[in-house]
Amino acid sequence: MKLATFEVRGEGHAAPAGDRQRIGAVVDSDGAIVDLQAAHEILHGKSSPHLASMLALLDGGEPARDSARQLAEAAPRLSVRSLEDVRLLAPLPRPRQIRDFLCFEEHLQNVVEQMKRRGAAGALGIAPVWYEQPVYYTANALAVVGPDAEVTWPSYSESMDYELELALVIGRTGRNIPRQQALSYAFGLTILNDLSARDAQMRVMPAGLGPGTGKDFDGGNVLGPWITTLDEIGDPQALAMEVRVNGERWGGGNSASMHHDFAAMIAHVSRGSTLFPGEVLASGTVGTGCAFELGRELADGDLVELEVERIGVLRTRVRRAPSG
Image (cartoon, rainbow, N blue to C red; front, side, top):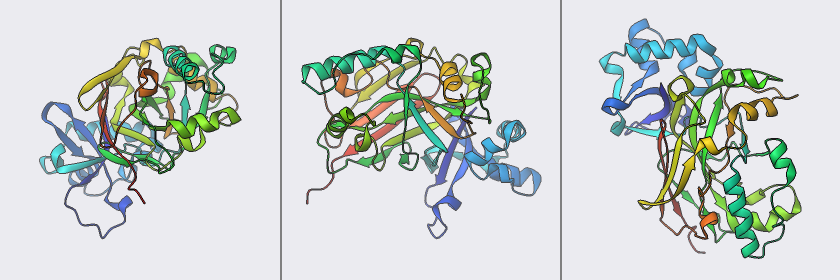
């Protein structure tokens, strides 16, 4: 099942944005989306609190998800809309948390090599701890946008970049989760475009506190186009990944090359820390999944397309801030 958050195009804007948001099940075969709340109201004569948002659905646990599956299969015609008639939002417009890992060795090796070529501070190679455990930073969950967003670049940066990542959505609460049970806590996968202001990031990283404003700006975390549930994904460690810029392939790889897999990520981050439904654990960038690795940069107006097998395509257009 593919689950999306959306607004209906052309609806009035008198209501608060949160009240206009709906969640739906995407039907790939005919380019349609089932409005789950509308289907519930038609079939049961009332709304369901578990269909008010994606977070509400996740908080409702297996009963809410089973209900969503049943509604998607038995959807009344009046609850089905064409994808052309809706505007897809980030499937989780406000995740409870985003932790961004760095799990692809090829990406890290390429970045270190590029830093050495540019004479950047801190280009010392891969730290031994990276091989010993998954490493991550906590990203800005308030800076999330969705599919087909146009992101204005922060005015303090001249170096625009994208990052092709897989993002796992946690589906149930857990703490000190054994690795062999870890994937049972996963709800599904979506795509993350971890936009990066490279010059700002390179400036601050030697301080040792993370990427700072190199990652932390409005629209910097792009999620979408929807969440594909894990039962439909199959093996999350066998997914082809590709990035295209203005239709040209710039790079990509496969989730099979992750040095630390999703089960290891979940087990690691839950040691002494409770994971909640609606949290996001991102894989980090697949090898050749960003322009920096290739010695390239984005330009004003470029269209970035990130595609992952069994999920879909996430499109983002970048714009420079207006001068003055």
